[in-house]
Image 1 (cartoon, rainbow, N blue to C red):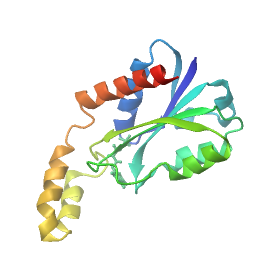
Image 2 (image 1 turned 180 degrees about the horizontal axis):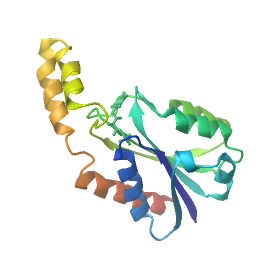
Image 3 (image 1 turned 135 degrees about the vertical axis):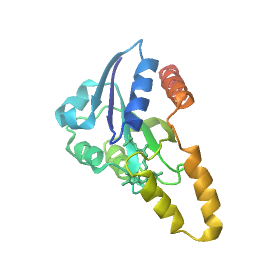
Image 4 (image 1 turned 120 degrees about the vertical axis):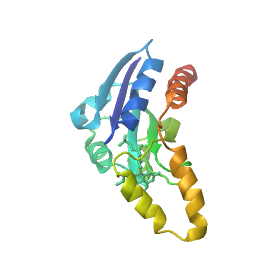
Length: 171
Ligand SMILES: Cc1cc2nc3c(=O)[nH]c(=O)nc-3n(C[C@H](O)[C@H](O)[C@H](O)COP(=O)(O)O)c2cc1C
């Protein structure tokens, strides 16, 4: 089976998960490429695509959506993966891509997400943001911030690899 893993990653968190997924798929023929190296005409040669991104303003990066708009031939099966700084994925970050895939009769056969420390914003600006929220919510936000430190961690990487293996068993 020919598999593509393609992703956008600003600070490396989603890239780390993409690589863990790649490790889980070692029995297959896999191409692992950042989204900016993808040609929209080459999607048709894959049986399955893992599409990943960090979450920015509740959505995946626009470069992923823009590329998907230009795809000429769609594989039938897609898997989503993303990393996000909130401890739970509250958003529906893939909403725009899902619309494109549904129009093209693709099936989303799996989703993976995990926490990724926000290394793009300095700790100082993250603290400033926390200090601007109501005092009663501040303690929880501080605790949550602490819990994102060092994520994705070893467990996240293991989980991503296992997730990839479970996808292979599904198809
Ligand atoms: C500008 C910006 C906006 C962000 N918006 C969100 C958000 O809406 N929800 C969230 O959970 N995390 C948000 N984050 C955190 C990132 O999703 C998280 O750190 C992710 O792991 C980054 O992935 P990357 O290292 O692959 O770029 C944001 C980060 C930045 C820099």
